[in-house]
Length: 134
Image: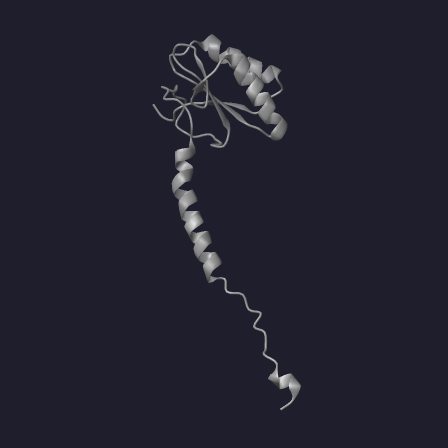
């Protein structure tokens, strides 16, 4: 026998089955947990029309409750602290979107004060969240 035939052939194939199994489990975990990641406080949002506008769930949530208290996600904060926080976040993500949630019985001035402060700080994408329907 020749020396070449005595060498063991190396099998260079890659088994993808374990990687596919891990990716399937991760996909299932993310599909279950993503809907639970929406943060915010419980508000009675005003109603506006019967059709939905495009809403980005990854946008920063700023809320104003019926007493005029500001919230960043679920954390109560002053308007100045919220502005400082979102300005710092914009440095990391220049395309940062903000969703402003105002309770239907909230003082209109408190909601518009936050909206104006965000616009003055240079935020171009600030949305107002409402309920759909009657």
